[in-house]
Figure 1: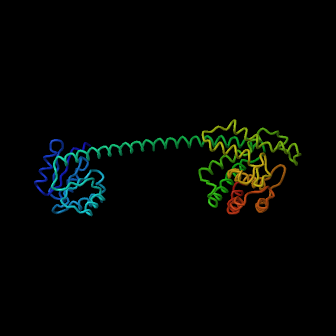
Figure 2: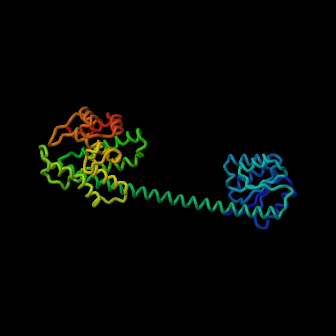
Figure 3: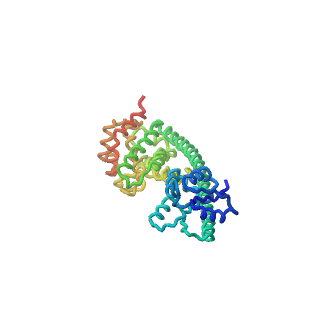
Length: 366
């Protein structure tokens, strides 16, 4: 709607007529002789009003009362108000600006100065309004684009999860592991990560990062795809050569990730590589393949390393029987499976019952 009205709230008839003469050739004029009348006119017509010139001292209702009521109705931002006064009180002037008035005109006023002031203010307010509309429009477009991106991201994440789970199932099938192994590793990793996030904020973990880490965790043994079955399915103890072949699943897994796993999410790909290569590293440097130690190990690797060790201890394999959860807990805490950081062990202890509940929920026992 076009703003083609100049509204004048002025009880002095001479001033009212003078202001009317200034703008009647360019605008429609809406005039009121007191604040109450002016308030009623304004509320009905504000969408078409370009500017309001209002005297502060009027009968029935003064200008400040009008501003106060319009402020409560949240209408003052819709139209610029120019206040007319013969007073020179700083407090009154300050109060008017606080309500949202844009300018003051002192009586007696100079018509040409008022006319130019009004012209400038209308142009400025019109520009501001158009700018706000443009920003609102652009913001709405961005919201729609973000919604589309989020939708596409969810689709992509679902496709990625399907692919990851498929690859993991291939590995577990070949290793004669159950599908529950994948679920346990994912849930152990996430549970441990949430404990670390709560206890040790210095690791800068977030729920989003944990989702990526726990998804990447299920690929930790993907390198076993290329190992000979005579090694990975051997029921007895591995000899020295076979042990080295088995250890190579970490570096071979990293090679597979680097060459074959190519998602748009670079951070997720990095987690996949780091976890497949380093999940057998230990905090004291006794792990493999790179002998990393202490803070050289990312928190992602530390989480998956402990999760994998715990699952290995509590699961039955062709080469060993499982330990119960109490035994597994003590073995890990005593460092019999290799050293873990004190912080990680503290986080593990804090969620021990949750970890054991996950083990029970996704147990391989029928």
